[in-house]
Length: 246
Image (cartoon, rainbow, N blue to C red; front, side, top):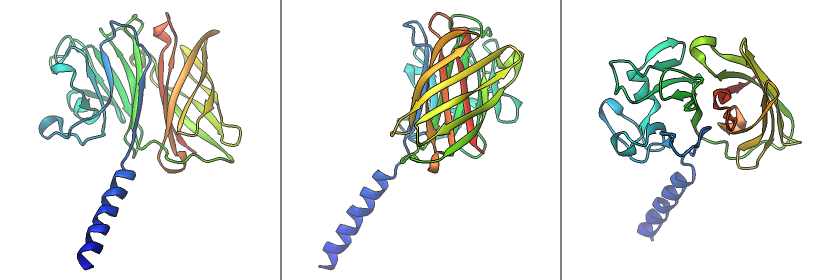
């Protein structure tokens, strides 16, 4: 009987670990057939310079190292820190493969949520420009009442304009997410629907041009969010953003 109880406890504990395993949410804006960027999660844990745990937010290229992704902290080790929690890796840098393109990405404080932009060359107005985000711990149970305001940072041509800033308001009773963020060159408006699975999707607009937005909430009580905007045939407007609940 004691052996049976021990086995039962072990099975329950294994089941609990599997149930509570962190879930990663991610997306990218530019899905054209020749876009090389991959965004997702680490599929197998690794050590060394690119040390990462299974499920960590990750990034890669289709034609580099067999399409293997590396964790964002690993990419940060190659990059220059240009601001607090902002990293930049330029296509012409001697520290990485010259055909990797240019990455600029940021990390939210105290949580594994990353967001940024990429282009084939160091020109974020090119057709290859891609916004992306990846974060750990999608909110498992969304609030169903009340409102929350998120302080937002956005990335679009960061090298020339810095962060976009603003606020998004989530109405959990109405399942809506609305607001705007901007810098001197661009204002982004968001009008999205919140889903029960911790995601959101809807409309985006920039300078009267219509686009779409998708993203996820992260952490307990939807304490964080991250997403992208996408503008077909106007990928220079594609923007990554993330925010923390006030």
